Length: 201
Image (tube, rainbow, N blue to C red; front, side):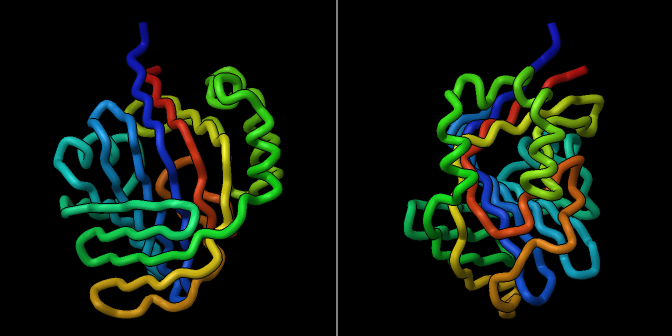
């Protein structure tokens, strides 16, 4: 039987006017326990993983593509009012807004179905049309398949982002799309309730 890893939590996608783009993962349940990590892409295109442990760094960097990996203290929390993330040189404080129209539609799908790999494989072409750049199924690194099951979605209304002590600029669309793997996050900054399933081929 193929090995399978399941990560259950939230993903926040944030873009800035400077071109810095960050994807913050907040995982309540995972093979590595509860943790947070950040995938960051600089305006130059340089892709950086900020991970809390070497174990997490090894798994994530074997599943996605990065130019640099750093193990740093990572803390991220959110509620329906705000998001706070601290990861080494990166600091994010964001205001979370209302559920999106797509989020309401996603909540209407029973969660056991919404996160099931067969369903996600079937709806992946539709997902790419609804949220350009985002897909629910694809091939990951290390000879793995990956499934993203999103069951809720909220807008991010504003954000203050600092990188190496410097203001990264106002909240902006995530453009160009991030290139860590087969899928980006939606162009509009959002926070998603998600279950990610990684399967060995």
